Image (cartoon, rainbow, N blue to C red; front, side, top):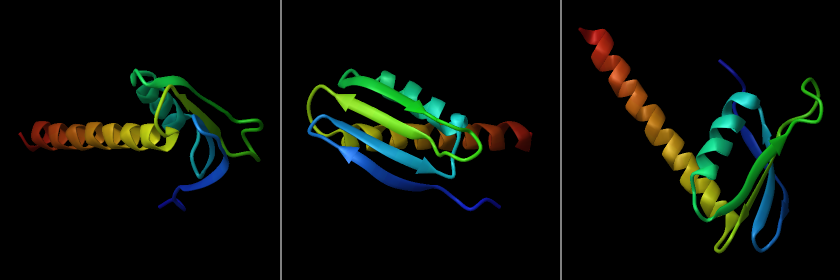
Length: 96
């Protein structure tokens, strides 16, 4: 089992936030970015991994209004719900 994920706040402005996602890579970041792009309040969602062996992803979100952390939380909830649905569907399909 892995170490787990940690978040580190890099910077936060009125309409934007940058966080470091420690313990994750492109897999989670791509899903998070894609989910955030579906939010009509999100102006920008991107990430960068400066060096894949020694750096952690830095994730940036900018919103039109409200708090960018709220957009991140909503996206995380949507991802969790999709994973839960996948788990249920797999359990149902494989139980047969």
